[in-house]
Length: 407
Image (cartoon, rainbow, N blue to C red; front, side, top):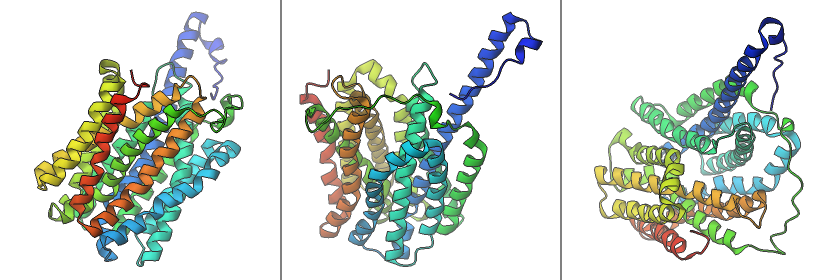
């Protein structure tokens, strides 16, 4: 961790007070580092929430069908996927601090360009680059989270992911304001860009340089030679959760506009309710696991996800759908943190490799879910597509109840 020279205290304070002063200074500094890391998580989440909240407007501006929108939305995860082989190596070579600062600025900058898209190919290209920057930002910010966690004796990673979810809620509120003021997507995206610049300028000094953290020894474990099937099942559970989460990010606004048929700015109410619930659930996830156990939490989460999606399908009205999307948000909030925690504590596989395996499988859910919704909606209707995804929640509960890895 970055060190501060406290030797000057010896000249002005008695020895008994030096230790106390040092502890207070150190605690204050570490809390500032933690806040900076949380704000970078917040900045990334705010950008994504800003984009997601204006998808219905961009769909209308470009006169896209459900299938057309689904195809274009595929460009964002495609960009994330194509960056995966390079982002980890780049963070390792140049340090997460440099990569995070540059990637977050580029992420927010390319967000503004999405608001200028006047043709389908422009939106597709912009989403692809937006996805590439997002992947670099995601790897770097999570690396920073790990480094910051090493400076504390208590677990704090959950609060970082909670900050990302909280940013989604704040982004949705800002979207309500922007819609009521009749801001175009481009001007709305500029607001997010300015916020990110402020976050970077006021916090970059407290982002930890990677070189000050002791690196782990090279792990020689080979999954091909010695596969651990429990990680595959964890990945499948995470896949089902990420597919459900992905459609809420990309299609909740469209669902409220075209199925619930809400007027004006209320179109983002579904997304807002989802993000509020997910953010709250992530901050409470550790409490629930400690009190009720992993198995009960995951089984209940799967049931809650399905209940929310089917409620939205059966009762496509403003109040029931708002509550339904809250149920989905609360359900998905517990799954990923819990699954990642189990994978990271695998006794047979090094933590880094275990998380990579589970994350790679789960990402496919985020990759496939939103485009799949578009194609199903084109063939049938948006309600039926939500009903099909609702099966994933049931699948989570069934898997968790049958697998021996859950105690």
